Length: 327
Ligand SMILES: O=C(O)CCC(=O)C(=O)O
Ligand SMILES: [Fe+2]
Image (cartoon, rainbow, N blue to C red):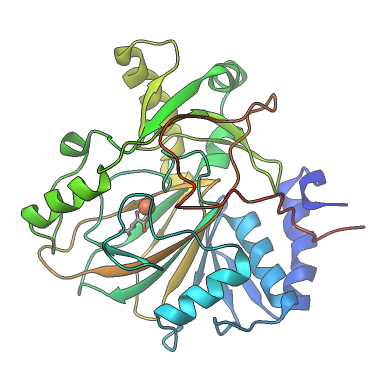
């Protein structure tokens, strides 16, 4: 039996325990719908296969996983570890001035999103490592977009399954994001210029089917700007209706960073929000994204590129089914 064939979440989690034990890791749930702490792992380039498989499974089940005490890890180690879980993308489709392997995150966005949803090949996961932290604040919160879908009453599910949204990197930056601590405004606008130096637009289904777990999730976030066939005012209202279900606190998980922490999220099943509540202090995190597939809706229809070619950013992941639970 494959993971996708086990419908009941509690059953999945029970079956997963054996895989965790085989990989020699501990997985401690931190929330009902999202979040777990993984222990007994020293992240790096050469983890045994069973351990990598156990981490992949823990990520699929828990959507966001935290590793603590990884003080030995540097950029090269983070990059090499990422390669065990998938194929690393370039740092970003347009932000290319900050190195060739990792994206440096300075200042928190104060905005809910999944990463890089304006391209067709949305990264499957992001791996974020704390490098410089403020003395207070600067937590990150993740939300399960699977839980949000599963909690929708039937009429809203039917509506969401019909909706397609255009996502663009030219999102409404000025209205969505306040200048955040630690990064001055001129640097922010420089960053925005680079962020929007080429325009990408992709039409994605609002409900996508996860290629590994078979779960359905809501695909929205701050890069979404219109719904196909609807007026912009209707976009605003419908977006709020669905987005407010994603960010219900009981569907979220919040992490207060400490040095040595590494967090991985399944970018196909979550949104996240970096909280800018640390004044003018410095805060720096290093991110690597992993190549993902092109989303598929509940009828098997794939997302469509409207503008921009993201092939320099990322390959399209071929079927990466979890071999775990194979009979
Ligand atoms: O600043 C944060 O906590 C999150 C940053 C972010 O959105 C990302 O790393 O993709
Ligand atoms: Fe992000």
